[in-house]
Image 1 (tube, rainbow, N blue to C red):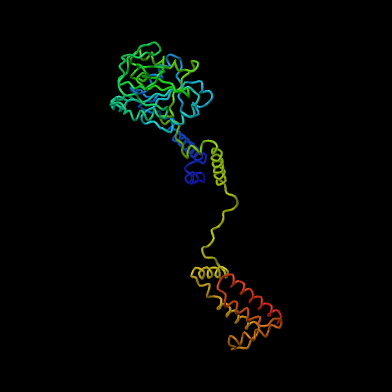
Image 2: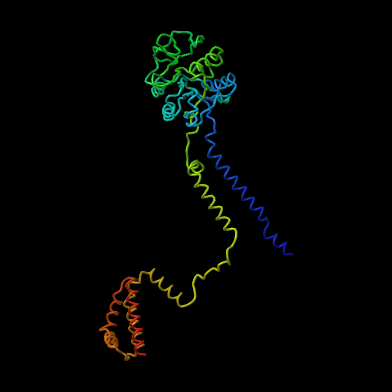
Length: 404
């Protein structure tokens, strides 16, 4: 078999093919990460009293109605920055409240829209989605007054009025429309839209350009099937538009654009620079690992040869066994015998007699060897043993040099 054939058998894929395969995999992984991170922000809220809902309590019909009459679709505020900017101050923001809306989000809207025209539409009905018709819903019952009053109290100090309005029709900017079923109203002596004396359906706050539509059945999808109410819905918005400006619908109250997590922090400023730096460092490390720098290092033996390796292994075993503290006196006795042999001590001298003989060899110091011997015998840790062993070695070397 030829050399190219052998090389092809060992490498079934070309390096360029492997490189582009890895690059495509990394690119797909990055795309999946970004899409999964931002997918909740682009997921449309379904059902209920939202501007995108096509159910009876939704307001998608009003959005489409404004698109047909104005020639362009009204913008949807998917973030708090969208309706709190200076440009958004020219818009009439329509905030449609659902029973499951976020109270904290409503508080932020009230704070950010201070001084800007805003219409708050209260909830009214308890609904369930219809299984056979996607986007449709079934009306069960009216929301308890306590639930609606809780939302109303977050906007203004008012409560729903008790009792039914005897008025069969409501005057909306000179247009008479049928009074909605189970009308919701609040007490107000100067209402923008009234359902009888002192009964306001559309009221304005005193301290802010905020408006509250107490009954959503005047502008929701269920109301727009009546031509008179459909026309009256435009009349209501025309009454409130600042300088006949455009209209904007809020989606943040329904959970759009409010979710923050670690993944968003990684791909948005100011931490985006850190993420890019880490990715660049990883890419450089990958490129660095593609090529070899210098010859390959040979693998070292598990047990090395030589006296040093033997000494190191013995020391490691003694340390792990916890026997280092008992080596001082043994090492001192070994150095005594070695010094006596090197300096020519008489044979058969006992330990203390040999110490005295070795001390007599040192004319510059009294009991020079004996003191060093005692220090080594009493050493109990590595530092003491090292100092004592070095002192004994220096003494022996110096005496041996004098003898020669």
